[in-house]
Image (cartoon, rainbow, N blue to C red; front, side):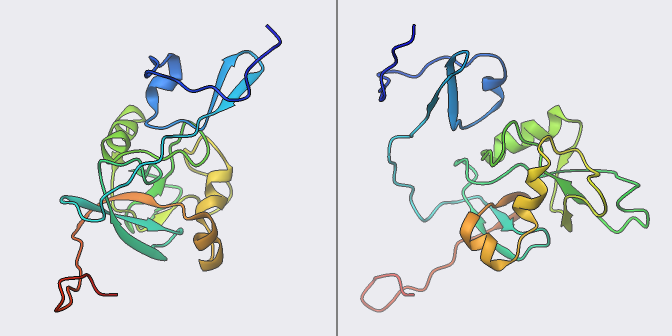
Length: 181
């Protein structure tokens, strides 16, 4: 019971159990009480061009935005609701991060399910997180700091959030057929 291999490779997917079934990705797995393994996914190549993208953004107020692939767990959950304490003048949607663990990335469909489970809706928020104090519905207080960042922190941590806004990937093709910078 006290001897565990340092590295374990799985030959097949394991069935989820309990709250594990609510997430698209995992970082750490507790195999027995008090014994944890870090999940290291198999390296994968994602194609840079895809259809039906969704705008994802980083920072509390759309500091940086790009097009995200809805099929890949590449952004944090973003759900909106009516919050009279944060939008008394009806200024628009304020979003919350509803995560099962800190920095949890979801697919677009996973974000839709998360919002529905919490009685919220997916949205294109005008602002993320609290206005004053720790108001909001996030499970992890640190989530507010993770996204209310300046450009330097955004580049370091690269936490993006889903929106309902659509986007298209545009490229510049050079005369030799290669994609330009």
